[in-house]
Image 1 (cartoon, rainbow, N blue to C red):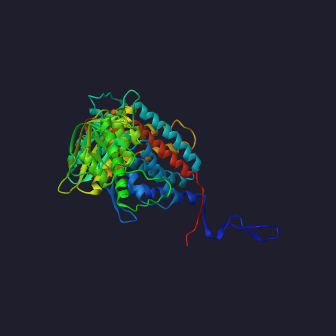
Image 2 (cartoon, rainbow, N blue to C red):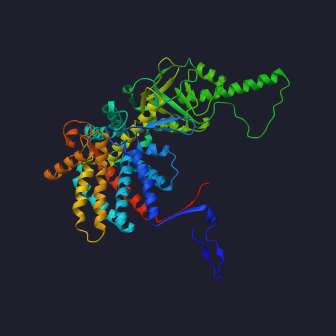
Image 3 (cartoon, rainbow, N blue to C red):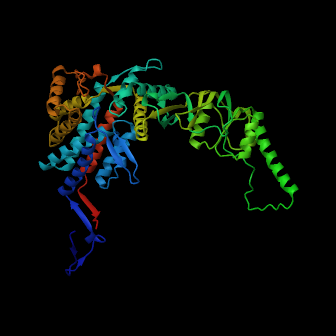
Length: 535
């Protein structure tokens, strides 16, 4: 740090503890920041596309995550550098907004930073580079609007939705049954979608997983799946046309809020107390019976006495059901959650066509299926798989597919995948560069070159010759002036992405370009980094 001196030549301190801080300024700071951003992008570059590799991450307490999802990898990586944290935020915001394309957006940002470094070496001012990038991103987004295609779908013809979801799932570990998983995702989204408002509430889709079985056993349940069983082993396991009382009050005698002491000195008093308790339980159970409930779902537990009574009165019950599940059950069955026994009325009961208990494998694990509900707006996707990591990764893949289906219902425009959209944008941006006088045109050309990094990474990961493949596809696009040609990752023998059915959502692609440009602008504008040096 530079010291400052007063008029008598005595040094004085500007920054507190400045001898312990390190400071990078000017071009050094920008170079260091760019290097950090590129390092993060390099990690994710190899997991892009259908032939991308997975990453294995070990958490602090030894749990292992294997994932292909950019956002998950970066979340778990525990990054220390400030600029690298910006890249993590970048993929997280893409995940929150779009749900898919989290790897691509980081690769894109890394490529923009790499190009910016070359421009800085030429002596172009970072602000001019940032402005050039901004102009170029506008050109690219408008060009995507122009080449996007709308497709129509309805509840009965959802094939286009399935095709787009399959593109998302093809880069994941579950790609061997991407067809069935994509159909499950689309059906789940259409079941809860509000097609008039073009809106989907993904909270209504519950994703449950259970180790065991194989991936093909994954199913969609039009109802709710609860990881609980009946409270008493002799209660009926199968209830047709159930009327469900959903309670949040415990099945036990009331306890006074104040401290109290009961003195019992004779047997009679004890009997009286016990009778009183029993009568109280009786009333509770009777109350549920009177209302017409044939199944009780309770948030709290009940002791053995209550359990025994419920069993005797032929009132099946489930205990310790979590709050979120209770809400979903209430939404699905059209019931109301009742906080006090006194408030139970027949209108507040939920209705389900069938409640059954199903056991899995040789273990004693049972789950409760609540199906054929009055309001089928809540559905459950039940995933089976060989091990816990596989199930977690399938959950993440399904989440991406659900988000893609939701985005298509919101905005049904698509662009073509396989790097086709990036290549045509690159050509459009390159052509637009000549129209801008001034230094910005160098930055705009650099943006066009950075766009090529996505198809290049796709080709590289697929084991093709990256530069050869890219230039061949590019010349094909220019020659025929068709924006559908992309990288043939799966070696099908054609570069036409329409034939391969590789689609991506328009809003997802636009968001990628905009977010990457914003983050790169932010990184380029930093010219002074003051940080605590670590001892």
